[in-house]
Amino acid sequence: MKRILFIFIAVFMFSFANAQDISFGLKAGLNLTNMHSSNSDFNNAVSGRTAFHVGAVAEFAFSDQFSLQPEVLYTSLGSDIDYGSESRVSDTQKSIIGNYLAIPVMVKYYVADGFSLEAGPQIGFLLSAKAKTGSQELDAKDAFESTDFSAVFGAGYKMENGLFFNARYGLGLSNISKEVSDGDWVKNNVFQFSVGFMFN
Image 1 (cartoon, rainbow, N blue to C red):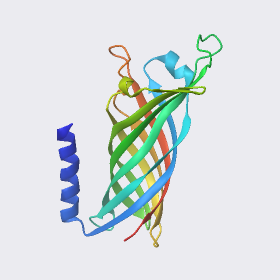
Image 2: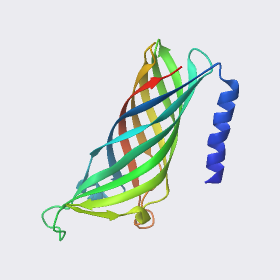
Image 3: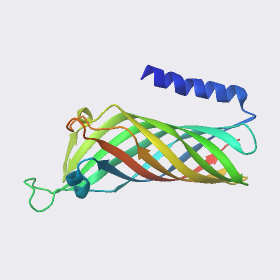
């Protein structure tokens, strides 16, 4: 964990020292999130949920085409689960919610004025997790791993006045559940749609 944090800090310091132009901003938007598993029964029971993200961004421009954009986001992930009519649970509808502090580091390539393609790694630190069934809500943080690793791909458009838009897909790479059998896994996947503003 310390090694990962060191790498992220080193990337930030290198970018700060070598960038031709630096700008900062804020963003917020919609998450269409789901959990995917090696267990087919789990996959058949889960469905996507709608959530949100909000946070700060910095863009380090190295040329007119290439830049690096690290971000710090509060983001909510998870899934809805339907146990079906044969479940012993009194309310068959359940939601699993994981709230993370996410740090994506996006490499951006501007293919045209204002329009960019982007990709990069993301690490997420679990802040809280809940299991909701009907009116009941339980703390589920102990059932999940403390970190989540993802690969993020997307595109964006930035206007001259600083307003920008992003669409991304986050592909979970690491198992997030402590309660699966050896060899099994559960991963986060999310589509994100954002709007933000760069101040300089």
